Structure formats: structure tokens, C-alpha cells
Length: 350
Image (tube, rainbow, N blue to C red; front, side):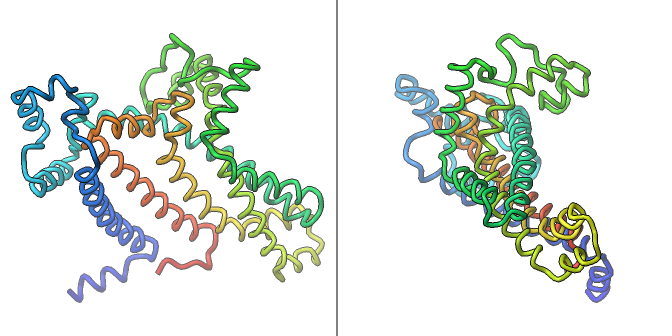
């Protein structure tokens, strides 16, 4: 034990932190499987009726075969243990609605959500940080007042309502935005490499497909980014105001450094720690909470898959989505903490 303890403390702080967080993450994922499994047992409705229909559900032989196929005929504790046993081998079970492995479904739907959330996050970071810096520089003047109103509106407007309004205006009325989905009707998807159409089209050199896929991203990514733009703007403004009041910023100005250098290097960099926190949590929320935007724009992502699974009481699919969402939040939080150390050397991950 003393040897293992010595070896553990001999590891660099960052490596110990990553190992510790991975271990805690595994425990959290185990807890998520237990909670999600328990919730699937208490939700109203019968998965047999939801998947077979009234006529088939009235036939005892069909019902018995369905329950046996999906393990619903076993006691609840045994069902959970069997699920964990399959999970260790990377098997999330078979979806009752698609009749395919849940891992196959997630591999199909998750990249679309990652593509949408990544585009929205990039847009939110560019706009949010820019507006926050401008608001902090012009504190209490008209640019600051306007930006504060914009950020407040961004965090207040319901996402579902905004999606409907923007789709109606820019597609139906003005006709300047493409329709629903990831490509035009009848469009051929690029060769499957990552299942993210913009990346796959770029890697395969299909520039026309890249343009079409990117144009279909504009509206849903913008709608998804609006709330996060408001949050990042407010946090950036607050963090910048705190940095600008510090002695090292006044010292940099006293040395005669250009204002741009003072803002970007001496004020913005310390403020990035707070911005990273908001951005990390927002990205996790985007990846796991895009169901409303995906529904309006018919975006075939994990939100749509989760919605359809809930309607069909597809227990295996619901648990698979819950586990993926939990893993996303755990990885995002760990990435945020690691970026902390890279941005600010004063932070220690002991």
C-alpha cells in the first residue's frame, strides 16, 4: 500500500486529477443508470401497448414473446443486473422502436447533434465574447446599455418560440433560408466518415455539399446559440470589469502599452476562466437539450431520438440517451477544469 501511495503522489497533479475524475465519472454513470432505470419502471403507460398496438397487445402469445425478447418478463432487479452486464461489454440493448441496437442508433443520431451544437457554440463564443468585451470597455455608455438589453433578451426569449418565428420568417416569408433537415430534398449525403455532413463533405472535397450542409446549419445553430450568447455576454462583461479594475491592468496602461494589447492580453486572458465555465456548461446543455430546436427544423439528432423513444416508452433507448447525456456532462466538466489550468497557471489541480 505504501508503494502504491508513493507512486500515486509521484504522478503529476494533472494526471492524478484526470484519473480521479474518470473514476468519479464512472461512479456517476453507474448512478445515472440506476436512476434512469428506476424512472423507466415508474412512468405511466405500458411499453407493450405502446409498441405493439391494441390489437397485438390483446394476444397473450404476442405479448409473452415481446416481453421475453426484451427481458420484461424477468424481475426488475434481474433486469437491471442484466443491463449492467451487457453495458460492460458495450451493449446498450435493442431499441423497441427501431429494432436495432441502441449503440447503432446513437452512432447515427449523435453526430448530427454534435455538429449542430458545435456550430452554435462557435457562434455563441464569437458573439458573446465580442459583445461582452465591448460592453465592458464602454461601461455605462450607450453601447453597454444596448448590449445589456440584447443579452437580457437572449436569455429571456423561449427557444421553441424563437425557432418557430425564425423558421416562419426566413423560410416561408423571405425564402432566404433552406428548409428542414440537414440537406436539400433528394440530396446525397457525403461519404460517411464522422457522420457530420460538413466535416465529411470537407474531408471528401465535396464543396457543393459542404455549402448546402452549412446553409442548413445557419438557422438552427443561430436559434440554439441565442440563449448562450446572452449568458456569455453577461459573464464576459462582469469578468472583464473585474479584470480592468486590477492593478496589473493599470500598470500595463501606465507603461504605455497599446489599448488593444491591454484589453486582449492583460484583461481578457484572466477573464477567460469564468467564460470557460459558462461555455463548457452551455455546450453540455446544447448537446443534451436540443430536442425543441431539432423538432422545429426536423434535425435528425439525439434530441429527436430521445423524444420518439419517450413517446414509444422505449426503455433501452431512453436509458442509452440518459447515459450518453451523463457522459457528455462529465467529460465537459473535466475538460473545463483542465482548460482552467492551461489558461491560469495560478490554479492548481492538487
